[in-house]
Amino acid sequence: MAKNRIKISILGSDYIIASEEEENYVRQIAAETEKRIAGITRDNPRLSVTMAAVLAALDYCDEAVKATESADNLRSQIKDYLEDSSQARMEADEARRENEKLKKEVQTLRSRLEHQAAEPKKSAQVPGRTVAAPAPISRPAGQNRAYSQPAPEQKEKSTLDQEIMEFFQSGEAEE
Image (cartoon, rainbow, N blue to C red; front, side, top):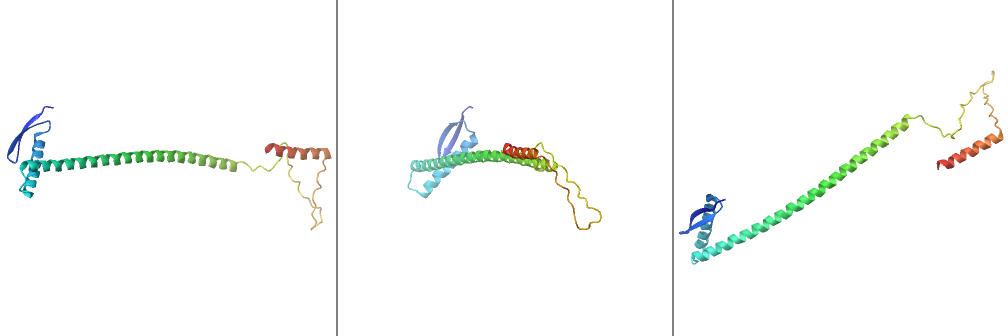
């Protein structure tokens, strides 16, 4: 960008300023500078224009340093906020993943429960052994309160011993 040559006047002294800034901007800065120096000389009539210009320069320099510190502080706060935001976003993502995992686990457990409820209840049977349905109770004709029960089946002792051993062996295998 070409440098603009701008003629300005501050407290009766003319200056030619070469700047890349727009002319209006340079004129606004010159007007503000003139106003500041004039205010200092009005408050302290014994000061020369040079001394007032030095005091105005010190004021502007002080404002610039404080503005820079403030901007640095804001940048630091923004950086901290961005880091906190990033950390919170990562924690939220992790919580979402954990939530989805738990939802799937709940769904799996519900499906298992439904599957188990749908299956017929299995009695505690020994594998390989069938349980016969109980025989109906028959009453002899003419007896009112006397109930008869079917006689228990008589098994051979060796078959009964074998079934008992199988029962205990299958219990050990399940453990």
